[in-house]
Image (cartoon, rainbow, N blue to C red; front, top):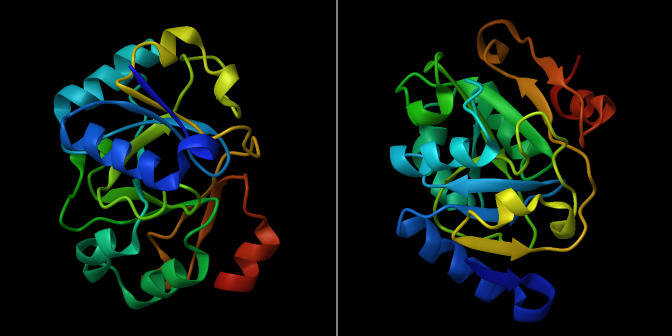
Length: 208
């Protein structure tokens, strides 16, 4: 396992290490905006299976696809309706996961049983600029709380990844999950989980 510390090696070294790991089919432990996560190529079945093994079991829940560069989202954005596209501009990057329509059934390993819906994240921070999309889920053993600091990551998790990026202590807040799948047709959005983005900020961006 390779360890990169962002405040020592800097963002460039962390980004290069992450791109190398993902391109080779590896699994990485990364800092997001609020909690530590496990990440891999969202189209690599073996790598996704490894993540489920590291966490302890496959709980069947869908996972988000995370982008660290807006340019990597170009094809996805072309599939979105006008209102959802505008919501992307207003809310991302930020501590939010947007559930959007997925008419082309992209990233089925992340969507699981419902390929018509996809969870999407875009974050900034020291890893911003990485060219590849990431299958991303929390870096905890199943049933345990997700870690907000590198030192709080369970050894069983940290020791079984190919790359570990130490980004220090994070906010400890999960992303707010917002369902936008009915936004274009009916103007409706729904909060599925509260987290790092407040409902007030969501109302300011999306309306009531």
